[in-house]
Amino acid sequence: MELRHLRYFLAVAEERNFTRAADLLGIAQPPLSRQIRELEDELGQPLFDRESRPIALTDAGRLLVDHAQRVTNATGQLKAAMKLHAEGSRRRFIIGFVGSTIYGPIPDLVRRFREAAPQVEVDLIEMNTVVQIAALKDGRIDAGFGRLPIEDRAIHRHLIARERLLMVVPAHHRLAQPAGRPISLTEATGEPLILYPNEPRPSYADQLLDVLRDRRR
Image 1 (cartoon, rainbow, N blue to C red):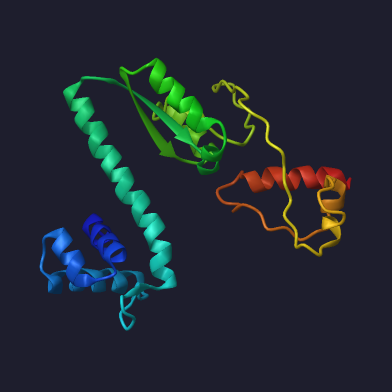
Image 2: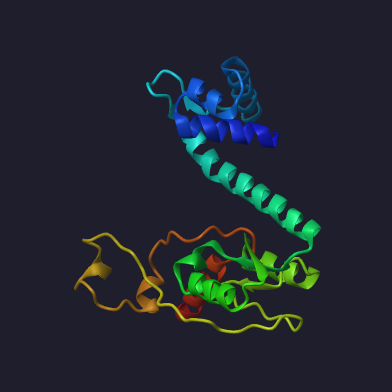
């Protein structure tokens, strides 16, 4: 799989039309169709429903859109970072972050940091907490925003915020009655749970399961 395959795929996914996507990319329509076929052959599944008008993404196509956008965005950030490094005009400060932290105080902290240090180029790279620890030790990032309380003498940790733990249940579930009442962890221990992905380990799911296991004892 090559980067151009992903760029071509995203263009077609955006335009929902091969001809318009080809015009946008500055190439002829037949070569674009061949590139998309090559990508589908490599992935082993169709990415577009070509019978619909306009063409529609398949389930596999919708899954690929998210990943392809991340790859192309990361590539753009890499090119920009290398250009700045070559120019040597600004110092770079690289921050790793867990994706879900952008819904908390992190965006405001980053904005305030940029305002306080406008001469510094701030780059954000999404990575889980475990990867952040390794990246901090290797010098690949300068700071990180994570969720797991990993103890490591080589890393200085600072608590930024505490968040309430919420449990979502169907409206007629026994734990939903009466509405709005607090649910104890003891009550939740016997319920089947849908959690965050548990890979790579350790994960936020592991942390939550450990808390529930402690309540069972």
